[in-house]
Image (tube, rainbow, N blue to C red; front, side, top):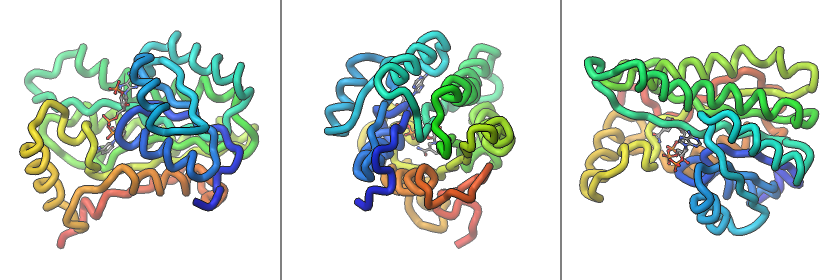
Length: 251
Ligand code: NDP
């Protein structure tokens, strides 16, 4: 711990699981107060207990805009400002092309793209000068993977947001970048509902695609998130930081 986020207020969507939870813990270890947004009170309570201290939870769904707006109102009442936004909530359903109806497509874009867009928009009036906004993209947004084209396109849109919103944040001196993870060992990677053995096999299969020879851990993404959230990355604007274990490298 080096207090890189001392006294900062960080807002994290999807802070109850995987990369979001690991990042919440890492932010607190660096001196921040975190507000995590999760979809139910039970998930909020569990996450706050896991984070341990300096954590507050708000219930909200990034695809349900009134609930998202209400969550920001709660942050305003308690802290009055936000120094760091980690727009991490996302879904990665694998849907074969032939089965992808408009509802599936809308859902993926509502959560991944519109969720990130409105998280930034609602945060804007609360953003402190020098605030850092970090969106979570995906290395898969530029790769063909059967069944994941809607997800990939939604994450490509998120990466575009990070590159194109900088001028909108200019007036308040805030900055925005994107963290694009490779395969990370979280429930999203195995799409849930698998046995331990199946999860192990999935992780091994993904690991074999990577120069790193293994999938990543949520804490490895949290370390990059801390860098992007802190003043260590103060000259970065619209950067796409790919932490993907060498997804496109031949080994
Ligand atoms: P998890 O499934 O562990 O976490 C996803 C989080 O997003 C959960 O907290 C989930 O809440 C939340 N979430 C989903 N939908 C909504 C919603 N509508 N409103 C609010 N919260 C929501 O997966 P990861 O930690 O892996 O995923 C975090 C981010 O990283 C995602 O954006 C994902 O696309 C991205 N990513 C992950 C990769 C990986 O290999 N793991 C690779 C590349 C990108 P709930 O518990 O209620 O479902």
